Amino acid sequence: CLLPFHLHTQWVQQTVPVSKPIQGIKFIDSLTGWACTGNTGSPNEGYVMNTTNGGTNWNIQLTNPSTSFNAIAVINANAIYAGGSDGNGRLFKSTNGGTNWTDLGPPSRISDMFFLNQDSGYYCADFVGADVRTTTDGGATWQVRISGIAAQTQRIFFLNYNTGFCGANSNLYKTTNAGLNWVLNGNFTDGVNAVYFINNNTGWIGLAQNKVVYTSNAGANWVYQVLPPNSSFTITDIYFYDALKGWAGNRNIRIMKTVDGGLNWGYQLNSTASYRLSFIDSTNGWIGDVGISKTTNGGGAIFYTGINIITTEIPKSYILYQNYPNPFNPTTKINFDIKAKNFVRLVIFDVLGRIVSELVNEKLNAGKYEYVFEAADLPTGTYFYRLTVNNFTETKKMILVK
Image (tube, rainbow, N blue to C red; front, side, top):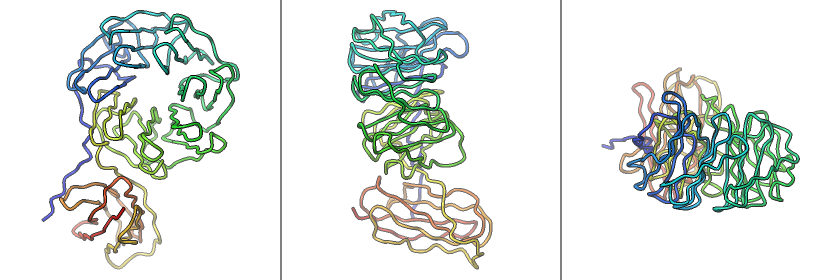
């Protein structure tokens, strides 16, 4: 008898020494990372924390009254920047791994920043209109770079020192000359809150109202990708390991994940929300918001919602059909009939009985349904899929061959 158990709790919550919202997190390897917090609650102060054992223990390195730290940039084990505001701009720099910090006092508040190396980087400010600045001397001086930006800035991302992107209200701007000039690269229906490009042509933008848009031609065209329903949260951070595998964070206990470049997004459950993300590879990652969670296996199972109803004709019985094609690589169709409105569960599990994906877990009307199952993230092998409706349960075998 196979005894399935859930793998979706593979985001494991870590213990942190302060009860503040995590607003920046960055790891440089499997052991060493930093996180910064806002100043919500009492006492009214923000923190920068460090771990040297993968997050098992976090130590406070910097405390500053009234400061909300909004972003952290980690260049290497020694050079770290932590930026934010206390009404005015605040930027702190360490050159010895956070043991000591220097207050650089930038010209304006910091909402996001991106450093290419210890000396060269950018930041942008919110609540003050268009404001992007760059430094090439480690934050000692800053130059304004806003030519062409006509909206409130909030997010930045750079591929290299010359080529970068800036989210400003619902617009995306691009520069190819280190911010001397910006051109409109996309205009969307909602605010730009996350930007990630893997090269000049291929990138994803996270928007408010649970939306992600994608380009494969440097922004000449943008395609809205479909995320799981039942959430209106803003996509606040995006990371892609390669052109296929990526995560999208939000202030929800569901972190979004795709293994096909965003053609299909599913979700993974966690207990801390995922306002900010940090990954060092395709399996080891950390997320933060109302705490910090860690995964060492890519987050475990991906749960997909959203199925196609083929017809509303009422079937005479509950039926689970054999998937087609079978064997398959990596996509197959699973059809089933529901004879009465009921709570339906359709899961995929491996030969050890471990659930690897939960496709349906919701109440459905009577009808004939089809689910397109995509298994690019699974290894070759034999799997089983099981339909459960009330007292009806049926299981069938399918084979994935890559």
